[in-house]
Image 1 (cartoon, rainbow, N blue to C red):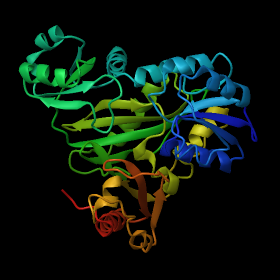
Image 2 (cartoon, rainbow, N blue to C red; image 1 turned 180 degrees about the horizontal axis):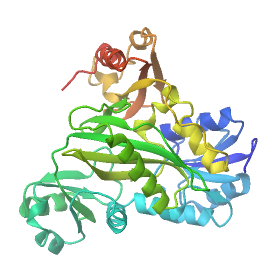
Image 3 (cartoon, one colour; image 1 turned 90 degrees about the horizontal axis):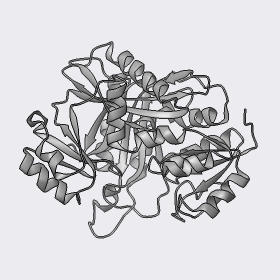
Image 4 (tube, rainbow, N blue to C red; image 1 turned 120 degrees about the vertical axis):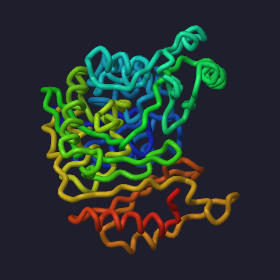
Length: 386
């Protein structure tokens, strides 16, 4: 075990890292953040902040000299960086697991190789791959293999000709062509796995998105309509199987499509997940504390939810509702007047449309009342249904 007051290293300084720093501090650890942004949310509250690129060897050597273990809050940290660090200290999750999750082609190949359910797809590396793509993949979605998130780097295509135009628009980057499916729901499972192979799953969340960005997570997922009572258990079983096959240690998010009542794995995130924010307020142990525990070899905490919850993302668009040219702080007093609502702002220095600036979570015992309060909070702050 790595015990307090050891120093932990964190690659990435976003909001997920900020919550990691807070969880580590509560357990008595110190945290050193490496992130190139001098105003990064995690770096601003860490014990030390190395303002450096993730492949800066001098900074990495400084990190290895000061830290007992290293993790990441950002899946696009180079896997080679994690492999380098692992020569000197504990690194969790490992480089190969992160390498698999940060490339859609590698991710799909992993799912296919191990028999996990996924949407039909084809790897696109050149124009011939598009010309030879199965016609059954159309209409489809062309997604860049690397660095696509929150709907970025994705284009809908109806034919091979469409796909070729889209691929050129994506600068002919290596991509995945995935069949477009009619979804019943989207759900996700966040779990933690320790070095002994023990897995603790948080309750399955039901998610809805706006413009490709997570908008609302409902926990537990509603088991009505196309979502059967057994589906959350099946999702947790698949997610746990993925963690086991990757020999994953840490906190992992697994997103699923539900199509005709069947689960299909969409993608994996080798870090805490946006849809797991609710664990801060509704669970015995948060996903961030689990990340600290798994990194340090501590026993995992209880993942049980003590309340139902609805989480709502707060994007930078809210700062520009009154004036599209000038940012203005939203009226948080309206949200804070709701007694069972927990507001979390990330301390980002500049709001912009589509940027995740914070979230709120409403908790309680009555699912319908919780959902009602969360939707009322959205309207009060100026988020309107589309």
